[in-house]
Length: 100
Image 1 (cartoon, rainbow, N blue to C red):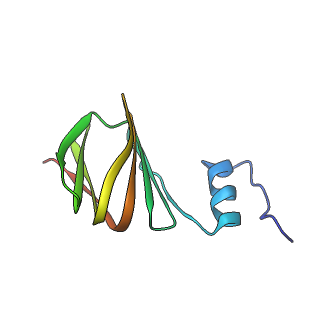
Image 2 (spheres, rainbow, N blue to C red):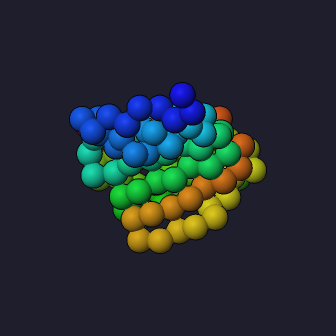
C-alpha cells in the first residue's frame, strides 16, 4: 500500500499521514503550541510568544510557561510571523523546558 491508512480517531491524523508518506518526524505538544521537524533541516513552530535568544547554533522561542530550543548548525529563521516561525539549517535537537 502506497499511503498509510487514514485513522479518523488519531489526533493530527492528516499531518501524521503526510509525515509517514514523506518519512518525516512530527512532534505535537499538548499545550497551546506545536512544533514539527521535517527531515532534520526544518522546524516549524506554531503558537510561540516571541524569540528569546537567537544564534546560528541555537534559536529559543518563548512559549506559554515554557521555552522551546532548536539546536543545530547554520540555523536561520526563514519565516517569522505572530505565533508562527520556520527555522532552517542542520537541526540536531529540539528541547522544551517548562518553567517551574
